[in-house]
Length: 400
Image (cartoon, rainbow, N blue to C red):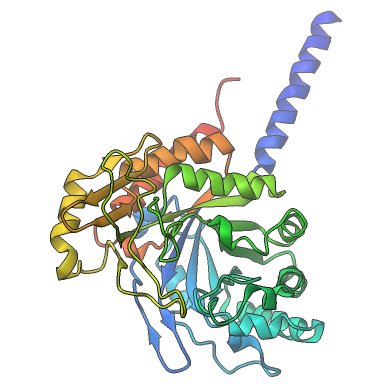
């Protein structure tokens, strides 16, 4: 009887483990596919994908962007303007990959603002978004409002205090959208990684947001921009970890968060720096203090872009002579030009998986964007290599 009881106990453990494993969702690997859609033109910026065989680890592709104001209408449109189509993208992917459509993006906020103002407008907007998802045969939608509550591109013209109402309205808009989409369609949101921009993301709102979305894409890039006055990493290991932990502390489950990877390079002009204290070095004035306009002292480009002639020599030095911080972030300070370079390498991406994804038990990663890493796709390959290791580690095993 004792042996029989032991066997039963082991069977119970095995069944419990099997149930937990079967119910666990696989690690997400999401890629944005980027273009530009306006009222007048549809431009493919980086509409490039590797061969299907290289995309086996990709779980979702998000087409970015549709304009937010497009859905503030009463009648269903005859067509949906996008630089590509869902069927076209789906045909270039493995069968298992989901295809979503992103709405919004930096500078595209007026449509969100109008839609969020009243319950009637929220319902109409949500209904039209759901109609688009059904018509395009997308698997879901990604909401990229940058940012509810303020700190937008026009933050010098419109005070954040004038946008306080958006904090609650953003939650309500997601609730209406989930109701319109139903449970079978995916709903996600791209949300800020930089602490100053989390105006709408609090301990009161985050738990309610998480009830509506399947996952959040935390934009752990552009953590340094022209509003900074001191150098830091734009997509560093430690500041990415701090950004992810911030959402967890606000009430988000780490399994429903995705770590953002930026497949592009940024530079900033600095003042004279102490070579021993490069993090925290004062920058030159990067934006107009009255208008917020770019003063031409910062820039960036993707790996797919042609390197601008005026920074090519400095960028070559950044690639060959750059260094890693103690946390694994890559940087280079060009002392001759007073130019600070910050970007991810294959090694720093690997470090993020070890020190951020694994340690915090994050449920996925995403990149902006896959075409930006063409034609070599080495950062993408570094990403999928780490994803495959995670999936292999949590997959079925023969032994206990």
